Amino acid sequence: MKTVIIGRVSRWRNRAIATAQSLRFFLVERLRLPIARLWHSHKYSNTRSETPLVSVIIATYNRAAILIDRTIPALLSQSYKNIEIIIVGDCCIDDTALRLSKIHDSRIRFYDLPERGKYPSQPAERWFVQGVVPRNKGLELARGQWLMWISDDDVLMPNGIETLVKFAQSGDYEFVSASYTYEKDGVITVHNLKDVQPRIGGMQTWLYRSYLRFFRWNIHSWRKSWNKPCDYDLQVRMHSAGVRMGFIDTVVAHIPATAGTSTVGLQAQLELAEKGLMP
Image 1 (cartoon, helix red, strand yellow):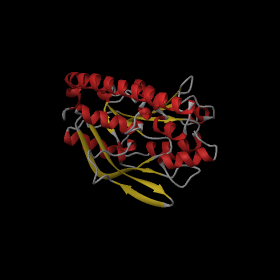
Image 2 (cartoon, rainbow, N blue to C red; image 1 turned 120 degrees about the vertical axis):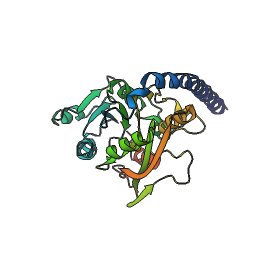
Image 3 (cartoon, one colour; image 1 turned 90 degrees about the vertical axis):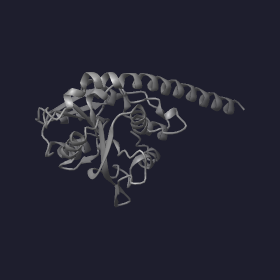
Image 4 (tube, rainbow, N blue to C red; image 1 turned 45 degrees about the horizontal axis):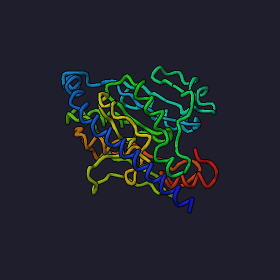
């Protein structure tokens, strides 16, 4: 009986916190969007630079090998060169800082949080929001006119950034996304969302104007009864607030199978948890 009561209290608490957060975002974001446009939209006119600075933000935690062997090389070899790579550690305890210090490229900056974000203990709930804290720190550190996100084990196609920038500029979009591929059980599949509305690609395909940085990542999204992943939460809030969005079919990123598994996403997280390897 006691367990049942505790469970009900926990559900009601989660519902109350999630509702309060959603209401706050609803009110603040709809108020700030027109103000941000008024102050900053002129910076994105066609008369401005065709190659604006793009900030690529990566949250990481103890995955130095994959980050440095896979993700960073794909960024440094982009056809689009005017980028900064902001890597934010979630209080890493491995040799991420040391390894990054050996990459001599002024476009890379590393900041390690003094303490790790406080995430749920359950594997599924943790997967919904892990990385939120370093990503929000990345928003503060970014200096680019455009913002991008990529996980520390994902790979951008060689012309990924160039494709997104040109598409965003040509359509006067505030936010653009695209198709991507992912690997599951040895099979690579194209994820293009043809039958989904709104058609918004995965986080690793996002590119959006930096004046939208007031859309913060939601550490409480796991508490909701729907739309729990923090990236889904963020993109739905942007769409609902009226951000001008565009989608391009071109594949701009690839998500390899998560190390230690043969799959991606939540399923990979649960497999790692069973092996005692949950990040």
